[in-house]
Image 1 (spheres, rainbow, N blue to C red):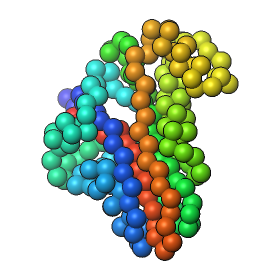
Image 2: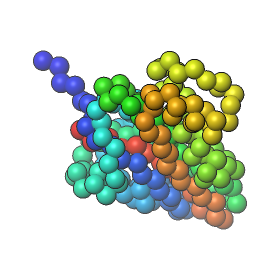
Image 3: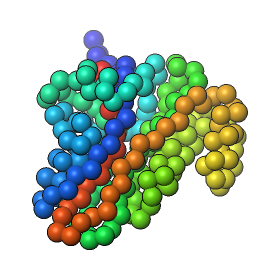
Image 4: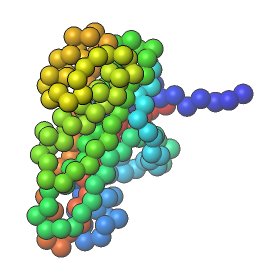
Amino acid sequence: MTMLLIPRKAFLTSGVGCSKEKLASFEEALRDAGISHLNLVYASSIFPPYCKLVSRKEGLSLLKPGAITFAVLSKNQDNEYHRTITASVGLAIPKNPADYGYVSEHQSYGQSKKEAGDYAEDLAATMLARTLGVEFDPDQAWDEKEKIFRMSGKIILTRSVTSTAVCRRGCWTTVVAAVVFIL
C-alpha cells in the first residue's frame, strides 16, 4: 500500500535574520518566521486540493519541534552593505477545492516589499490561470490580470508574503518567505 502525503492545511510566514555568519543568519530568519524548530523539506509549486489556508498562529500550534515539515521556501542572502534583498512566495487557490493551486517563489535585489509580493502573486496566479484555461494577456500589469482572473470565477484567492531587509555592515542578512504545509 502506498502512503500519500497530502497536506490538509497550510500557512504563510516570513522572517529576517542577521549575523556575522551566513548559516546563523539563516537560522535567525527561520526563528523570526517561527519555523526554526522544524525539519524543513523543500516542496515545489503545487498547493494541494482541499488544503485549507490557516493563520500562522493556528498552523504553528499544529506542529511539534523536530517534525518533518514540507514547505515552499523562498530564501535570499547577502552581506553587501546597504543592499536591499527580498524573498517572496505567491499563492493562487482555485475556486473548485478539488483542483490544485500554485505557489511561486521569488527572490530579488532592490525591489520593495510590495513590488516583490505583487510579482510573486502574479506569477502564481498566472500559472494557475493557464492551467484552468483562463484567457489573458501575459504582458498586462498584475492589477489588470488580477481583475480578469477574478472575473473568470475560477480563481478564488491570491496572496503573497514577503520579507525584505537592507544589509548592515559586517553582517550576513537572510530573508525567507514560505508556505508551510501541515499533513
